[in-house]
Each structure stands twice: as structure tokens, then as C-alpha cells.
Image (tube, rainbow, N blue to C red):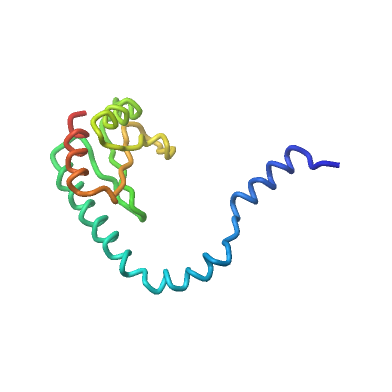
Length: 133
């Protein structure tokens, strides 16, 4: 007898959540972890530099930078009357990618999520566009 739809959904969730890592990846991980400083430091440096750029660029604007807890994303909070999706689409048309805050179920409106991995010159151009809203 085949499993019920509920059991099937639960099994699919477990299979997707707890994906196994293949043997070649496990073997390579030792070398990758040993050499992580070579690629980790540039990422950390860029994220820190972009955070400083964001803080300085938004100082005298209607946008604010929320505290960053971890990772390589930053959350900007703008005027609450803005339609996040419209802003994100207009930024995309201008060549800059930002995600609307509702993608992350943020409890407030008028927010954007930006990658701190963005090259600084591109981030500056995107910030100039963001500040026009």
C-alpha cells in the first residue's frame, strides 16, 4: 500500500532538508577548510567595506541601514509608503538588483535587502538610485 499524501510530503521534506554529502565532497572539504583564509578574507573585507559605504551613503537620506547580525546581506528600511516590489523592479530596470523585504517576511514595509558581496562601484550606483525613492 502506498504512503498517504501526508506521509509522502513529510518524507519529501526530510529528504530535501537533510541532503547527504557525497564522498568526493567530504574528501575535498578537508583541503577547502584548510585553505579557507585565501577566499574568506576578501569576502569579509568586501562586506565590511560595503557596510561602511552603506552607512555613509544613507546618512542624510530617508533610508536607514538596519543592524547586521550575520551573513552577507544588508536590510535597508525606507519610507513605509513605498511599494517594495515597484522599487525593486525599477532598480532592476536601472541595472541594480535588490530584493523586496517581503521576500523575507519582514514585519514592516518599505524595505530592501541588498547583497554585501556587490562590487563597491556597482553598490554606489545602486544606492544613488535607491535614494531617489
